[in-house]
Image 1 (spheres, one colour):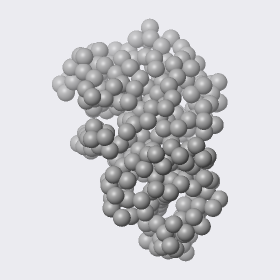
Image 2 (image 1 turned 45 degrees about the vertical axis):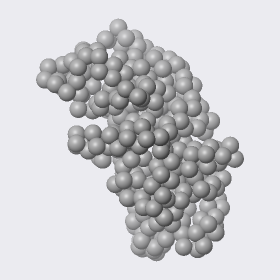
Image 3 (image 1 turned 90 degrees about the vertical axis):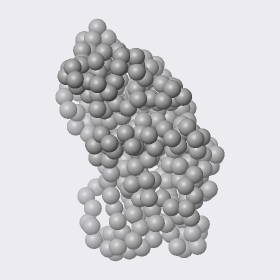
Length: 323
C-alpha cells in the first residue's frame, strides 16, 4: 500500500483524507513516479469544491509533481528507472507515488531540485504560454498582472521584465506589493478598486494592450476597463469564482477588445508543444532571469492546512507538499 490525499465528495478542506491506496502498477505506456515533492495550485481547490467536475470519486487531488521513475510499463522507451522527472496537468499528484502516462512527463534537469521542479511546472508553463503564445509580450509594452505576488504572478512579473515589458502588478497588501516589485513589477496597485484610474495615470491615458487575470468574477469588468482599444484580456483563473455569462457586445462597446480563456492542457496537448514549453521554462530559470519562489511547504498529509492558507491569501509565490 501507499498513501494519498483523496476526497469522496466535494467540500471544504476537511473533505481531504489521508488514506491508504493500492501500490501503483504501470500499465502500457505508463511509468510509476515516486514523488519528491508535489505542487499546490488553485485548480486543486476548484476540483475539491466541485467547481471543476471530478473525473471519478474518490478523487486524488493534485496536478503537478516531481520525483523519480521507479517502474516502466510496456512500450515506454523515452524514460528509464532512476530518471528524475516532472509533470503538470495530470490529476492525481497528492500521493507518495503514482502511475501516469509517460507522455505527460519531462526529464528534470539536474540543476533543478524536486521542490523547485514541483513548484514550477504548472505555474511556470502557464506563464510561458501566456507571455510567448497567448500574446507575444514585446519590449516596451505595459501590461497588467493580477495576483502579482502569487505563483504564476511572480513568474509573469520576472519573465515580462526580462523581455523588456513594464509590469503593473495588482496585489492585496503592501507586503505583497513589495514582493511583486522585488520580482520585476515596475508599479504595484493594492486592490482593484482604483486599478483603472491607476492604469490611466501610469500610462498617461493610453491604457494597456494586455491584462492577465487569474482572479475571475471580482475583477472581470475592471480588467476590461484597463485595456486600450483592440487590447487582449487573458482570463486564466477563477480565484474569486467563475465569471458569469458575458454579453459579447461589451467587447465592442469597450473598444473592439479580445478575450480568451486559455488552459495549459490545450497549449501542451501535443507532445512537441509540451517539450518545447518545458524547455523554454527550464532555460529561462537556468539563466537566472526567472527565479521560482518556493515560499511555503507543508507535509503532504497536511494538505488541508495548505488549502486553507492558499484560499485565505496567506501564501506568496509557490507552495509545495512533501510526501
